Amino acid sequence: GPWCGSQFVWRRRLEFGFEIPHRGPLATVESISILARLGEDLGFDIFCVSDHIVFPNRFKTKFPYSESGELTGMSGECLEPLTLLSFLAAQTRTVRLLTSVLVLPYREPVFTAKIIASLDYLSGGRVIAGCGVGWLAEEFERLGAPPFEERGSVTDEYIQVFKELWTGDTPSFAGKYTRFSDITFEPKPVQKPHPPIWVGGDSPSALRRAALFGDGWYPTGVNSRYPVGSTTQLSSALDSLRRHSEEAGRNPDQVAVACSIGWYDDLEMHVLSNGERRRFTGSPHQIAGDILAYGDLGVRCLILGFERGSLVETTDTMERFARDVLPLVYS
Image (cartoon, rainbow, N blue to C red):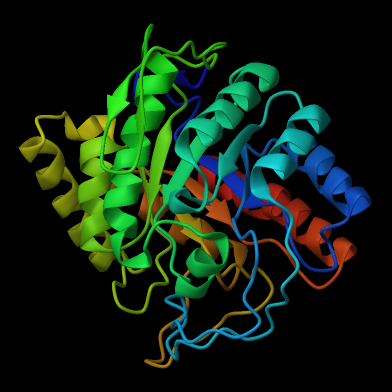
C-alpha cells in the first residue's frame, strides 16, 4: 500500500488528485460516476470531496479564500462528503478517498470515527482523513456544533479521539468535549496504525496542529490572511512545519505535504494583480514547471481543480493534463 505506519511511502515522486463535484450541475449520479471511472483510468491517485452540511442563506462571516472576503455564486445545495466517498468507493478499485476537508466540529466524533473506519474497511484501506476547523460561523450555529470560537481545540481533541478509537483495544477518552470508556470499537480501519490524517489549513495554528497530530499538512495556498501559494511563502511555511515537528519530538519527514491547487488552467494564462502569472495556469510546460518547483520543496501530492461548466469541458481538462502535462513532469 501507499502507506507504512504513519509515514508516506510513495509509489512515485509525485501523486495527483482532483475534487469530485459535491454541488452544482456536475454533482449528479451520472456525472460523478463518469468522472470517477475516467479519473481512475487516467491514473489519478486521489479523489477528494469538500464539506458543507447546511448552507446558511445569509451569513456575515468573511470567506477566507478570496481577497475580498466575499463568496459569490455559491448555492446552498451540497452532497454530504462521507456519503459521497462511500459511493465513490463502490465505483472504483484503487484510487484513494480524501475528505478535503472534513470540518470536524460539525459531527460527533465517535460516530464520525465509526463512519471513517467503516469506509476504510469497505474500500480496502483507501481513506485519507483530511481534517479542518471550518470557517463559517453561521453553519456551526445551524448544526448545534460546539462554539465556533473553540473550533481549534475541538478539532485537536476530535483527532485524538479518532486515533484512540482506531488503534485502542479497549478505547477510552476523557476530554473537554468527549468522554467514553468500556466500549468495543470494531472493525478497526484496514490501514495501520490508522487512516492517514491530513491537517488542512494555511494558518500558523494549522501548521502546529499538523506537526502535533497529522500525518500530512494540506494547505490551499489561497487564504488571503496566510498566503502560502508562492514557492517562497511555501518554503517558509515548511520551515515552520519542520520546526514545530521537531519541537513535538517528531521526525519532520513523518509529516508529508500535499497541496490543494484552487486554480488550474492549461489553456489560458491568468495574471495576478501584481502582474505575475498565476501558478498552475498557462502552457503545459509552465504548469509542469510549477509542479516540479513544488516537488523540489518536498510536496508529494497535488490536488488540482479540473471542474468546469460542463462535463465535457471537465473530462477534456483531465485528459489534457494526463496527456500533455504529466509526461513533462516524469520525463
